[in-house]
Image 1 (cartoon, helix red, strand yellow):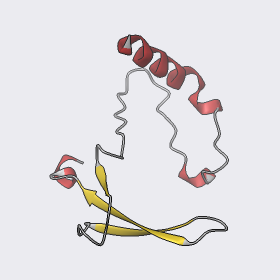
Image 2 (tube, rainbow, N blue to C red):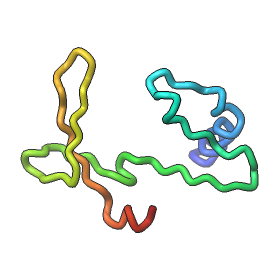
Image 3 (cartoon, rainbow, N blue to C red):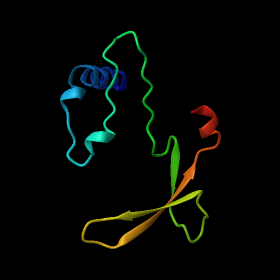
Image 4 (cartoon, one colour):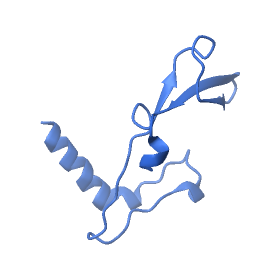
Length: 90
């Protein structure tokens, strides 16, 4: 069953992704997929694949602390750990 979902997702990306625009992403941040079917594209999920969120930054020291501003709310500090050997892999 998971195989069918993957095929459906890849088909959607190939045929529809250029039509999708997300209002919360700035236009200069878009990455267009290559139009040629002969080019390979590697898409990696960031959360829990490339990075790992730290549950409590006061107990565990993260590699990076990000300040996240939520509109109308207070700023939250999020701890991020970079997976071992990520930079060498990239």
